[in-house]
Image (spheres, each protein chain N blue to C red):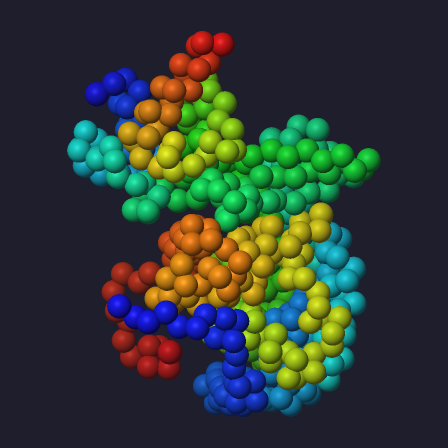
Length: 335
Length: 87
């Protein structure tokens, strides 16, 4: 039986300078030597992950070979644009702004989403705002079923559990946002002969917190092996501005303010990190609980939620399925 | 096999591509842990139960003890219909 280690957030401490050195070496090797690209595009959300990726790429390739793309739309928080500019400035890279509202309007993103919401909240109409929410995982064994919260202009809120068709339509329609951003990133990459950077951390990558062929698409994902806590350590080491480091992680997908915790993860990121670490390293729920202020039963629920999300996200990670093995030059220059 | 159980089995087979004999699907098998029903599937199951049996399932009732196995669903639906019938 493995000995219970001294479980604390210190388990996730890394040597930031060493990690930065390893990542920047890997970025330069992948982009310049393997992909033969002249630089990279990083979509800047104003969050810590994309800011760290931009700063790492600037160190690896030189800031003149990194473009920070800011893609506001009519529902994104004004903070995102402001902090995105700050991220570009702190990394010393060129910011480019592309407002994607017109594209989203043309695809019917907002209209289709609103129709889905109206199917479960009939009062939902012009001037209302919305978000989706999951129940807490630690409070009970209740299944984590999405609810939509609609807020009328007078501030009153209506909540309704999703139906299967509303849920699928909602996901399909809102995913236009992530896919449009990625399309724009590849446009700017192609016209410069650049590669595109994906910015998920380990928590997001492992738990499938991304849209397939949206923010999940990229040529390189420099921090996908790092827990969010470790991304913050690197951010501090790189001198990422406080305004970005102190901002709560947000999805910036729905018109009402929404944290990642409400939308997807069951706990604040630092606690999620420790739970995922424990799950990955065979640490028992009873041993990790005290460090999180949770009971063994509550941690067991988080573990089940981690496993459930891994099952659900298997499809997201799956490469296109080939009927037969493809040999020759194509596979030789692949991974 | 009760009518309710037969209807639930038919629903599962028709909606979650379960192959094989419906009658052999163990009533005690966890549908979520085996990956038969995913998170969207749980919503589909709830909608089916509410519509088919004209019952209202509250958020705090959406727990494995009520809907994670066929036996649990049968027990839960029977209980809910009994409660509603008594009102």
